[in-house]
Amino acid sequence: MPSNLEFLNKPEYNLTLAPVPFKETGELLIGIDTAAPNMFGDKDVRPQKIDLVIDHHPTNSDFASFTRLVNYAATGEAIYEILKEMNVTITPDIATSLYALC
Image (cartoon, rainbow, N blue to C red):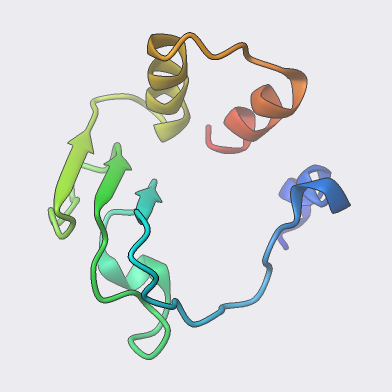
């Protein structure tokens, strides 16, 4: 984990720090701040299908089934906007995670 993100390394967050092969489960797969499929890892571990990508990179290759491309400095701003639209209360843990996306 990069040292600038160490503050996220809490047991309750249950972070996966090593690439893990994706298993096709039929569940919704959302990519956040991902401009291209290779950002999910090497070909042998990346998923075959990504349902939704929320991203701010103008170079996004539009590889997902649906893409929400925003003109923000960081994807965290878009996630915050979505959470507010859903009337989610922004807790300290959510705020910390959003900070990491900025």
